[in-house]
Amino acid sequence: MSNTSASPSYDAVVVGAGFAGLYMLHKLRQLGLRARLYEAGDGVGGTWFWNRYPGARCDVESMQYSYSFDEALQQEWQWSERYPAQREILSYINHVADRFALRPDIQLETRVLSADFEEAHARWRVRTDQGDEVTAQFFISAAGCLSAARTPDMAGLDDFAGLRLHTSAWPQEGVDLRGKRVGVIGTGSSGIQTIPQLAQQAGQLVVFQRTPNFSIPAWNRPLPEQEQQAWKQNYQAHRERARNSRSGILYDYAQRATFEVDEAERQAEYERRWRKGGANFNHCFNDIFVNAKSNELAAEFVREKIRAIVTDPEAAERLSPKGYALGTKRLCVDTDYYATFNLPHVQLHDLQAAPIERFTATGLQTASGDYALDAVVFATGFDAVTGAIERMEIRGRQQRLLKDKWAAGPRAYLGLMVADYPNFFMVTGPGSPSILTNVIVSIEQHVEWIAELLAHMRAQQQQLVEAQTEPEDRWVRHVAQVAEGTLFTTTNSWYMGANVPGKPRVFLPYGGGFHIYAALCREEVAAGYPHFTFSPGTPA
Image (cartoon, rainbow, N blue to C red; front, side, top):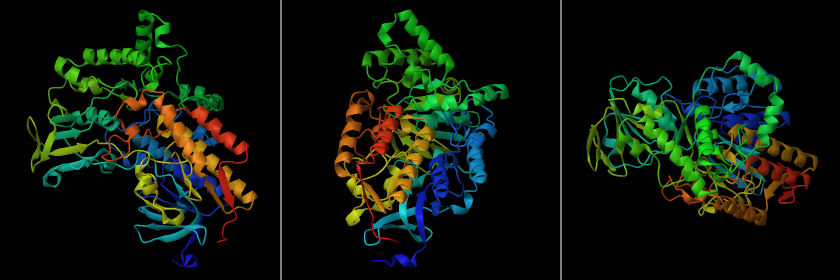
């Protein structure tokens, strides 16, 4: 075994410099712990560093998509739009890194390759692609739920002589696509945001769609100073209400079921939600996610909107989602997405009718014909929730690889810790609300819970903590049972891992609601952490 004393030593190593990693680092320093944060990119920002494609924008309103832990911070920052664009969010994150002087403890352009728990020393040994080899008492993944990008393995891809782009790795200097023949593969959230922007540049744009997605207009607009100040005057109350909601977002959550009102009132409510815009449409009635008939009525309303916007009836039908429930794939939020298909230089190709067969030097071949292209944009999504964690070789007790433990699906207690992996924490891990929420609300709750546990360990003079196996098993069953009571499990979505070949079909987040989850976490603390095992370990 390696000589632990010969390696640089930290109290904690954190992976990822997005919202989760930065706040985790801040909390660790407040505890007086010596921490090192490794980030693969050459700047902080996490998903907002990498996803800089044209049109990249958050689908949570800017006054809510921000940290709440520091009152001065939330009062001083000024947003320019209702929904913040990538560049503005990245500026905000950089402001936070500077404001709290976090950069000295962050090592950029460094990817963590492996982390091994060395039982003889009760420490983690972490190795990076830059040759770093360090040890730490605590190993914390803040690598993100949507950070492990996917490019499908397509025949002939290396033969393509044109420009290849991925929405999650867009060149920082931008790309000039004026007059070019551009193909976009994928119509999830990234595709739906970037397609209208690319259509403004491209000479010809071909959208290759496998499955159409439901999308609601953002109705984005400038955010006046007066409106921001009115919100800031009641920031604490707004935050508290959000934390006591299902999604950690101040939405207008319906209190009525679909069939408690008549047809005219239903249509009026759908219309009101459409005109307000955003993912709040999901909450038009309180049975949307559990009643298939109720869901279908809301889905048909959106399809009728698509038919009214898209002038070509055949294209409108191809763009209209069918065969799965509204909201069980991530509900997208767009600006002029459907109207883009009315432009004469924009073409929609149905991959279900004619799949891509292979790339060529000059474009790609489909079952129905060839397309000559100068550039291809992959908007093909992520290996969500578990991908970034599993891409690191994480080994716990008896050197068991975490990926092997998760071969049939991820296992974690509260999405925070994994049995037999002592002192390893995940921020917004599998089995937590994560991607079903305003992720910053979930991040803050997780980071603060972890920090409280570390403070408890110090007070009790404990070196190690790990989740117990039986509670972990019960939590995994509970997460599955909650999901099975909804329509989510009826759809092949990335929530289920269905976009990754060979990935187990498991509903990845906890669907019981953020407010319920947070209450369960508080109960664990109040009861003295009964589902965790503490031990003195071996002093470093």
